[in-house]
Length: 299
Image (cartoon, rainbow, N blue to C red; front, side, top):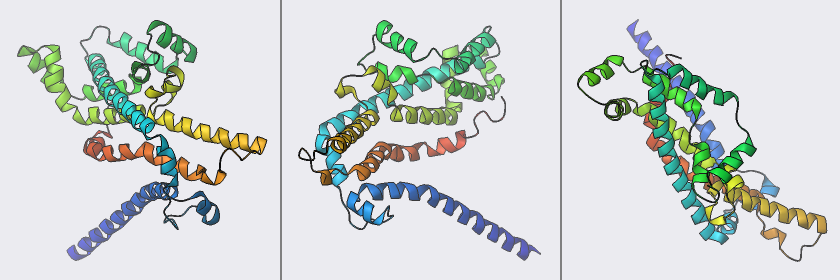
């Protein structure tokens, strides 16, 4: 009987491992195909379609993108700055706000919570936001124009609030009796106990800042402040405009169409955009897995 149980357990493990191996391939293969297309010439894409392994390696798309390497590197610098600063500020401010409304002894807890929840239902709109950012805060063509719009996510605040509520109140009461201030309790007790939640929220904020391009479209006119996503989008839009003008006028004297790697360049831009994040994610994976159930116990 014991032998049958052990055999059944082995079969179950093999099935589970095989399932997750296949699931991993489902996620990995599209990324590999994306890279494969980015190093395939447009002629091969037309003749052979999308290939997992390209017929021939062609770096033409990357060469075309990096003809303005200085702009790409500057865009990377801008994106890294706003991602790091924005993630740190949004996580710290969001955690402080969440801790405040998680405390049952905070007199205005319900009012502040409702006020924040109300902003999830109704927003001021694009025009009032633009007027606020440009006419009152005067952040146009500054890093703050790229950081402030995405700094606070009420949803993330509520998720952290729920996590903080699960921390035993006796710990906070003991620290208060020992004479610890609220800031001391938050920094020395709450933050260390909430590392999985903070890392998970920080990762989500990081992805949001890294992929953001709308603030640059609205508030940035100087190319030296273009983040990576917006610069790549601008380059692709310019190429599409060139192709459209050539189709309308029929004039191909100005540019050789064979040197425009349209399809592979789209994929190359995607690789450049997601590459750094793929390298960063493994460092957050341990905390991210622990934080997947943040807020699942109590609402």
